[in-house]
Length: 267
Image (cartoon, rainbow, N blue to C red; front, side, top):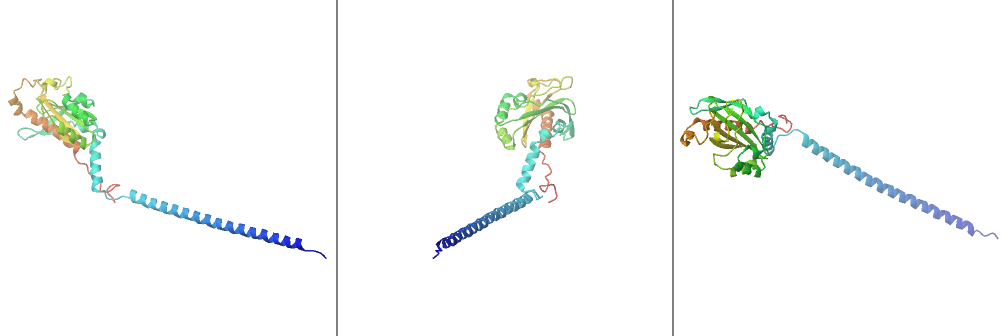
């Protein structure tokens, strides 16, 4: 009689093979489902990130009203850059109005503008030490004549890093009116005899990140030692010098017009 065990073995082997294939297929389907799920989560997260970033970018770049802090910063930055942004004739105008002793408006005329120089080279040692300790960047100087051409003034603008540095420096500056900015004489002009010995008085005023120094003398070359102290105190010379320096300080630190919005005046 014929025996059939081999056939049964073949059928069992086929069943095992088919079951393995089904399991492999099922596993593949699970992996594919997991992969698609992870991919979908990544795409969703990326879309959310892009959306949030786009929303933030739009919010940041769209025109909006400036905050009080932004307005203050705008003013400070605008004033602080003027010494570089303006031409030299903008810092030191051709004419500067001042008030004489009789309160009549008069005009000081600019003789010349000196080259930009270091803080140590433009001021007396006691002043230079304070300026340099507080981060003085440079000094700009120009010389003026009063309307009568009897008085000569040198105005020096010391540029500090910021308003805080300027305030700290002015707290330490000496009140000695014999020291300050060094005068600048211009050969071949009425101001050609204005030197160290001819300085009668010195002073300064703070404005923004600037300290504006003034020094004054006579165009005829009189020295400080040759002029009685009482005459200096009652002379128009110092009031005119102080007024000219104050006007230049005012020009430099005058608050600029601030735009209402981040992109102009339209929000």
